[in-house]
Length: 377
Ligand SMILES: NC(=O)c1ccc[n+]([C@@H]2O[C@H](COP(=O)([O-])OP(=O)(O)OC[C@H]3O[C@@H](n4cnc5c(N)ncnc54)[C@H](O)[C@@H]3O)[C@@H](O)[C@H]2O)c1
Image (cartoon, rainbow, N blue to C red):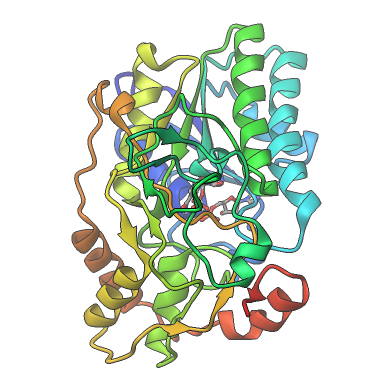
């Protein structure tokens, strides 16, 4: 970074993206503070060993005013707000408490204490869009206003259908200016977070940038959380000789982004004034289906294990979603790590971890009981 004495706060700095961001900032010579509540689902063994010893670690929660006050004191100038509650879990109100109210509290504290914060980058998500945009055979674009109806999923009909012809549609890459049609509590909380952040930023005269990340993976992704982090979930299953449980038919596509590319996007928009008050997609723009992900991982772990297609689905899941990231590419960002290279680095990391266990199977009953996962006909 340009100013070596700048003071950065990274919330969620014990997590996947936050911890790598902390390392990059420390490496650049900056002063760094971390605010993280060590969420029990993500960090059941407490503070992870990878937390950079050169950063000041504050064990605190974004839902608590006094913890924001502690974290933002001592002249913090720049905030990377990564802390959030995510995944498909039964704790609905916690998404709003952590992601929406928790972020609003940050602005309250900055205003009330007249803190010298100069810029804030918030972590948003592809989840704000809802289902992918599509193109019909005639080339018309179509952005489904709602998720796929439960009745359709119940009949194992996974693809998005044209509302009048009933024909399957072809997914497109999704730009920032398409409709924001999220219907999940996580997506709504992230949309609230980015909108209130940009709005409060304008009103307080503090530049804010929101980054809508694609599915980000890499070393340090929690090995314990059964509700989120598909690369870790599949990996812990494969390493324990369990066939990865794949929802729908495994042909749904996602955009997988390696963590260092995500970190580079964060740093770029923090440094570049042209990014102020804007939202950006951050993704590779390469559709990867879930079956391909499982097969690649199985190959890396040298396991002859095929995915388990149980006919289950998660209401709220989108069928396809891949970013059009041309807007941030125009600022000079580009993804550098291919899926193959990123997974190879992840695999190298996980195989160095002791006693990798699998937590997904034990959580499955709870997921079924709470309707997070359902069985089709
Ligand atoms: N990883 C992805 O695929 C992805 C995709 C889209 C958006 N995001 C967003 O990126 C951000 C970082 O995600 P990640 O993948 O690094 O997640 P992560 O779970 O690895 O890290 C999040 C960190 O935040 C902490 N945290 C959670 N709630 C908190 C609270 N109330 N107060 C303080 N700390 C809290 C957790 O302990 C954890 O260390 C999140 O805002 C997430 O919503 C992630």
